[in-house]
Each structure stands twice: as C-alpha cells, then as structure tokens.
Image 1 (cartoon, rainbow, N blue to C red):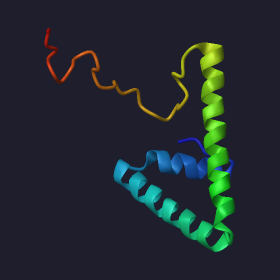
Image 2: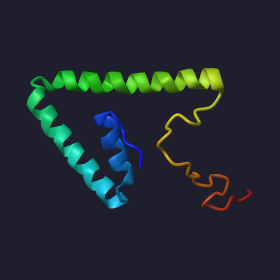
Image 3: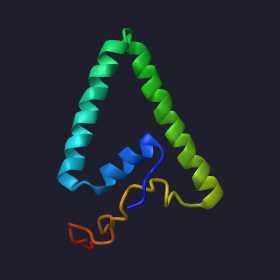
Image 4: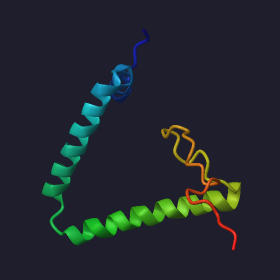
Length: 98
C-alpha cells in the first residue's frame, strides 16, 4: 500500500476501500449533518431558495453549453453509471388503424 501525504487523500482512499453498505451509511450521515449545519447557519430561508435556484440555473447552463459545443450531454456526470434507459420504441398500447 502506498501512503498518501494529504489528509483528504487518505480519507478519500479509505472511503473507496469501504463496502457499499458503509459508503451508504456515510452518505446518509453526511447528508443529515449538512442539513443540520444549514439549519443553524441559514437564518433567512429565502436566500437558501435563491441559492438553490442559482445552482440549478448554472447546471442547466453547463448542459446547454455542452449541447452547443459537443452535441451531446454524455459524460456530464462522471460518477453516474452508464445505464440504459427505457425502450421508448415499443408502445405499451398497440396502435390501431382506423
């Protein structure tokens, strides 16, 4: 095993070695801690709403930029697995001719 000199690198490598159940537990605990942190820090919740909408608009802007430059949004989320979508070519209701 090679040693990491940075503390964040050590934590990241430790988390990557953990089983999926431990990773899920850590994600839930981190999410709950983030919600508690936001609850105590944010006094005017309107500002939180505006910040969330700004982040959403920024994400949409990035996707629009990718569409104009690369003609695809593939690879936008490197951590997301490549899963096939539903087969939309098959209609659930058979078409009837009149």
